[in-house]
Structures are given as structure tokens and as C-alpha cells.
Length: 326
Ligand SMILES: [Mn+2]
Image 1 (cartoon, rainbow, N blue to C red):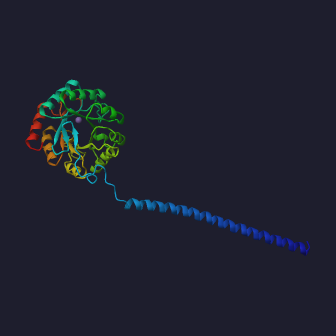
Image 2 (image 1 turned 120 degrees about the horizontal axis):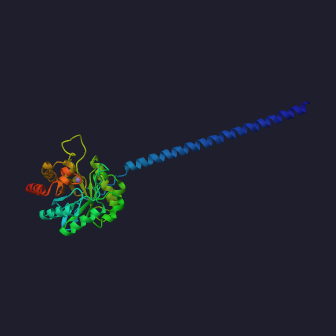
Image 3 (image 1 turned 135 degrees about the vertical axis):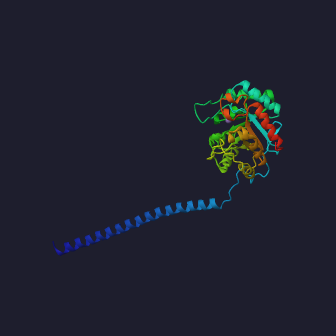
């Protein structure tokens, strides 16, 4: 190899080295660019989340539709001549379950005689055990409607399936959502589209806040005719079927504009203390009391032990009336 050729090769090698160096530099620059754009995107996302959290914290909380904050005046629910929540408390009574036409007629006649205007009765019965009487279903609603028409009463009955809400409106004046369904949100939403008032029972382990939010589910769908009913909550106490939470009454009256009732049957499960508990509920500001009555409680297909017979019902009613609270 002569000197000239060696020099030429050296120059070519230098040029290749220079090109390689430039390529490596370009690669490094590109890599840096890619990394910083990934970092920027991550940073942007963090900033977006931070902004959303800050906006949420800063935004004034919209008061619930059912709250006193959004409506100062009491909601009054009219059922024919009867007004619930207008300051004159009422007694709602009737059998736990609809069992037969005769049974419902007998109770309806007794209620009519006592001057009661709203009757309860279960056609769909969500029971603790699947092997217990589940109710007569639509047939039960028809029996209730017949008795209501005959004796001029208004009807409250529980619905457990969102698909039955529309059908129920043909038979009942008030749809009850039971304690076991208080957080059945699809049922609550369907009730929010019903054209009848809703009686919402407090869940057996629901806090007052959860109870209010359940009512809000109904109101949020457009139905603001809602009544709340305290029915006792589960505690360690065994002397009563549940523990009647009397304090829930003034709290619900304070926090919401809805009528508040107390179910003395399911909260106590004890006939001999139903009258004093009803008086306590009314003294605490309840707009009404609910009690179960059966012509022959010993043969009842549900809640046999805690339903009043008709003479017991009349005594109960008299005792509560004597207090001047009803
Ligand atoms: Mn019952």
C-alpha cells in the first residue's frame, strides 16, 4: 500500500467516524425529545386531576332536593281528603299480608268504623326466608283495591320489582318501598317515575344519611311526593324486634321537608308497648304512625306474633288518641 492510498483510507475512516458520531447525537436528541414528551403528558394528566379535585372542593355543595335547604316548607301529601304532613297526624293500619278477600274486608270495615282513611296491606312480601309466604301478588292488589273502593279507603302496598311500579299505580294510592329494598337503586329510580306518592321505609341497618340519600334517588327522577318511615334498626338489643330510633324523627323533620312516620309494629314486635311507642313517635313530631291489624293474628301467614287483633286495635287507637297527640 503506497502512502497516498493509506492517507485516502484514513480520510474515509475519519469521515465515517464523524457521520457515526452525528447519527449517535441525532439518536440521543430524538430519545430525549421522546422522554420529555412522555413526561409532559404525565404531568399534564396530574395537573388535570389536581384541577378537578380543587374545583370539586371549591364548588358549593348543591343541596339535596329532599333537604330543608332546598325547600323550607313542609311537603304535604294529599290522599283524597286526608293530608299527610300538614300538622294533623294520622294512623295507617292494616294487615301485614293480604291473605284473602274476607280477611281484608274485615279489617277494612273495622278501620272505616274507627275513622281511619288509609289502609296498609302486603301483596308482595319479601320475606327473610324464601320458604315463607311470599304474598298473593297482583291478586292481592286487586283484593286491596276492591276493599278500598267498598269502604272508601286509600291503599298503601309494597312493590318489590321495578317492572311492577306502573301496574301498581292502577291499584294503590301509595307505593311502599320496604326496608329490605331501601337501597335497591333501580327500584328507587322506577319509583321516582311513578305518578303516586312513595312511602319509603328505613333499611334495617341504614344510617339516617343513607335513608335520606335513598329518598333523593326517588326525588332525582321527578317524584317529590315521598314519605319517610322509621321502622326500627338492628342493634344488640333483643327485648324488641328492632330498636325504634325515635331520634330519627326530629332529625328527619329537621333535615328534610318530607312527612315522617313511625311503624310501631316492626320496630317493637311487641303488642303491649305499641301504644306508648306511638305516643313517643307523635310527641317527637311524627306525621303519622303505622300499625298492623289482623282479624285473627294467630292464623296470620306473616308476622303472626306482632299483629293486633281488631279489639286490641281499637284499644290501641283509643289509648293513643287519649294522649291528645292523634
Ligand atoms: Mn309485617
